[in-house]
Length: 79
Image (cartoon, rainbow, N blue to C red; front, side, top):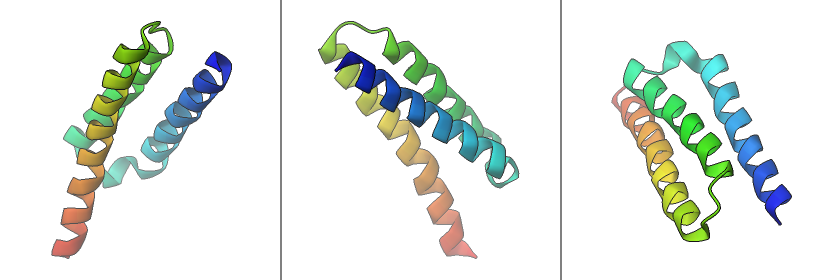
């Protein structure tokens, strides 16, 4: 189970890196910082042994990701 969890985490990290590299000019500096923060938190999450802490941290990461895409979606509606 641990290997599957780490693979999923690695996939999410790679996905965020891909989004950043392909859309860097589309994100504000605040959004880039949030996404880079997600990557760092995900890396730390891989070594967290406590399942409850992992769940709490993962929810925090999802909140960060949702803020980025809520901001992007809001600006899309303005134009």
